[in-house]
Length: 231
Length: 231
Image 1 (cartoon, rainbow over the protein chains, first blue to last red):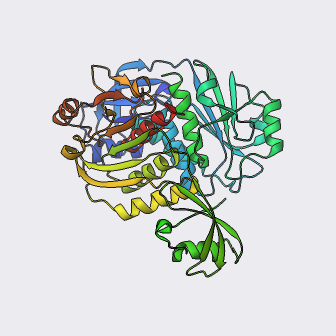
Image 2 (image 1 turned 45 degrees about the vertical axis):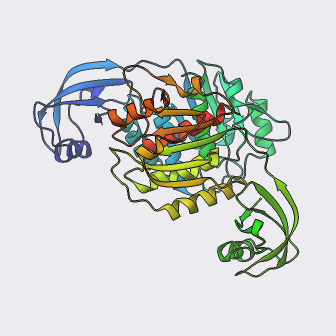
């Protein structure tokens, strides 16, 4: 099944944009009268009938609208950008597939790369949402300063940080049905100041397991563990 | 910390190969007398003192040898190659980081791409092993036919397959301390014949969660769930 995306559908826009139209008509060879599936990225799926099979602006009428069942938890991962931009794009793709709600790209003391192609990350998120047949487009935020994200509210707040005082494994302290926020540091890890600021703001230090993980792998592992806690 | 790799160390080879020597001497600027850390990829770490800081053949003598604590479980993921080769390389990198023992690349009925750069996958595995400071190099096998892998032995065998008969979630049926084998199908999934052959050979049908995952994401999710069952 193919899922198309029209974020302005709730505002009454009843056609696909140029890229989506091309894909629908030229690549998938849909014709007038065919039923296609569309999401608005805001929690709804639509069955639509093509009224004009135009490969620049494919118009349709809604046959049926259905709401995606709402989860009773949200996952917010705040992560430092990686030196290699592909790695953070890969993280966004996989986190969307597994089910993330908000991704914040954060600038930490040891963050080496702060240049961020936000539009690119949003494109990656849209295609991952379509590919995994989700109806909600996760929000991509950034670049945010650590000092700002550390003051954010959530019902369970974690900072991935392993030290001598052996923190608990995230899987053992994540409670189901919460709004989670997890901070994932850069290659050089969080600074002592950042760690204490997080603790002071109600974050719990957590481990993600035995292995030493790259930044993007740690972000994905955290996202997956929180999903498993609710699956 | 940097970890170097010399698979022939147990056979008495006391130097780094050209690439590793260049990295050690040219890039990291190590000198004679410096202590470096080496693994043989067979479960051992070595502290070694550089005896000749040659950027083509850096020689060393062993100061101390230590065995990596052995896990009481093994993870074997048998996965179909993806159309896009980058995706299976990415899977190997991440599975090694999280902790996989054997990766078999398998040719299924719906596998679209059977051409496999095995040397490339082994390179990826080596650098992921070094990066995550592991002492054991996972084995990469392939390309294997589905008919061969389905006859393999393991103490818990799973096939990732979701259908109307709602299979159990892997996290609920994976027992700790086992030798696991998980089959991950291609984009087009396993055929009905492959599924029944797996069942007939003692594989359990499992779900990896709510989301529709790409092949490489499913493989990584399975690997991570099995690690978490033992963490």
